[in-house]
View 1 (cartoon, helix red, strand yellow):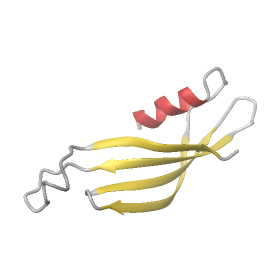
View 2: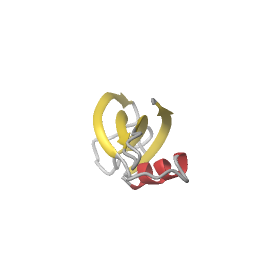
View 3: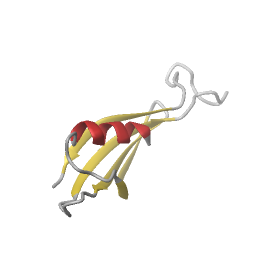
View 4: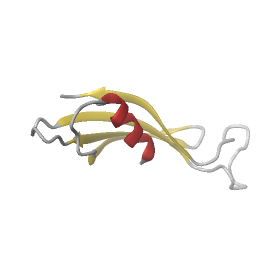
Length: 89
């Protein structure tokens, strides 16, 4: 996910990191505008073996192009946004 890539780089700029890896989904919440808030634990490995663990909350909004969806509540296209980012270690 490019949004998480950019945020990890922003959080750890200057550190010697290898990127990030999904660990697990720890929570999913459905919102009334047809989007989901998903809490994901990620691992950020480093060359010095001092790996980091973070919690990222992303909002996944699917497209509202279905005729069965109330357009007054759901008026967005597909999008992924980071809502919250926490360092766990």
